[in-house]
Image 1: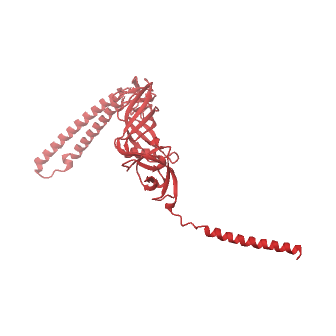
Image 2 (image 1 turned 90 degrees about the vertical axis):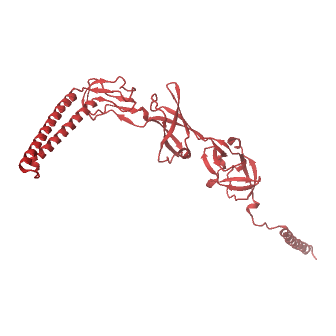
Image 3 (image 1 turned 180 degrees about the horizontal axis):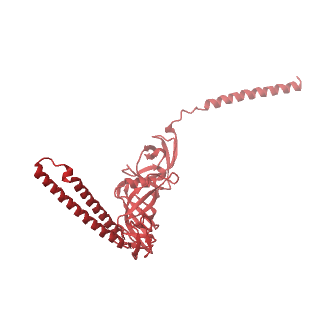
Length: 381
């Protein structure tokens, strides 16, 4: 056998041995591999952050800022025309006045003459009524002498003349009352304690009825407008007698007032999620001006058994995952009392509890977990 044939047989044998060896090795590896069983929730182990929380006595508190404003501005509009003969010393921009103060007075002489003239008209109308009454009574008596108890016609009894005289008297009395009202209106007053914003009235000036000559506001109408997030507003509307303190720094002094929620906006701003609310003062404040900034603090009554959860503990759908026996997840839907940026005040816990503070998806009741303590644990205790 030649060397070339011998070499060829050797190469063929090596190839056959390689194929047989590869096939044998593949069989061995396949037989040693165990197919995994179906994956279950009990086999999954999540690593989650947790925090221990404990029920405690707690008062819900939040602070915000606001601005003093007057609920209404009143235009100074005289009801009669005439020349001004007197102006109150405080009826100028920035002045204060009481509800019994005459802010300005219009010359009353023309109105006094109207009152005297109409008093005479009333007297004349009253005399005419008395005369018509006497004539009617005389006509009735004459009729009865001639015709006995027969029904007397209205014209014979002069009843139309009597009715007309009575109506004339009523009209004269109404005009007299109107003249007296106009005379009173020459002394311009307002039914509240107020402050002057603008005034365009001066002695000697002729003012016209129905035209505005200044603007004032009622000191009792001062209120504070503020913006609250929807959760704060929701809590405040449901709270029973919350303590509301309004602090104001004005003219170098710090003032503290008690306030109350008067009314709230009917809508929430879609962009900022803030709603405008209005607080009023429980006592009248005369020294404040619109535009002054305020600090508002709201506190609830002390509540027992409130647990402060880290804000990250609230999962989607408003649920919380509890940790039972240190390694088992348990789903819980809390009774949320108040939500802040950093924490959630909730009811329903009666002892120290471990809660999950990291976001988890696809978790199920009874799932096994491994826990690590959250860095936010101390912030809620």
